[in-house]
Figure 1: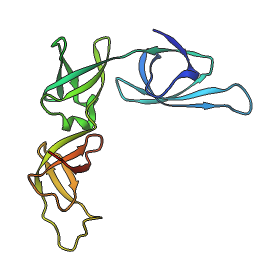
Figure 2 (figure 1 turned 180 degrees about the vertical axis):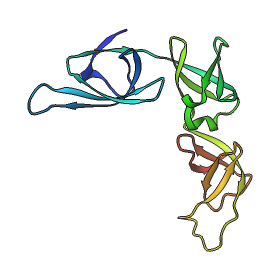
Figure 3 (figure 1 turned 120 degrees about the horizontal axis):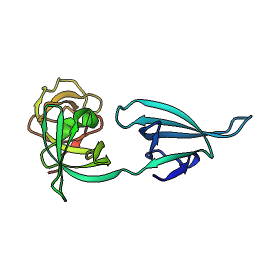
Figure 4 (figure 1 turned 90 degrees about the horizontal axis):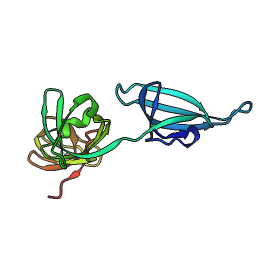
Length: 189
C-alpha cells in the first residue's frame, strides 16, 4: 500500500490505521504557537461506523488504501441483506442493510449503484441522489393553509412517509432525495 504524508490527507481518502480501514471525514492543519504543526483528522471506521479523531505530525506517513469502485445492479432485498450483481462478471454480492443506511428504502429492482470494495468485501454503497416514486396515500388539504409554507403527510409506494406540498395528490409521481427522504419536485415523466 502506498504511504502518504499526513499533511496530504484529504476528505474521502481511505487509510489503514491500527489494523482497521478508516475514511477521512475532515482534516484540519493546526499550528500551535509552541511546538510543531500537526494534522488533526476526523476518521470513520468503514466496518463499524465508529468515529475517531487522530493527530498526526505533518511529516508522519500513513498507509493509504485504494478501494475498488464497481457499478453493480440491485437485484433484491432478503431480510436485512441486499443482493447486488456485477454486470461485467455476473458475480453476486450481499450487502448488510445497515451498511446502506436509510437509503436502502429507495432501492428498486435493476437500480445501478456504486459499491466500494476492498479485497472483495463491500465497505460502502452509494445510490442515486434522487429517485422517482408514486404517492399512494395523501392526506386531504386543510382549508386555509397557504401553499408556500405548509406541507402535508403522504405515503410513497415503498411504504416510506414523506411531507409533500398540498397540491400533490395520491397517484402523483414525485422526485425524492435519497439522503434524507425529502420531497424535491413533481416528476416530469
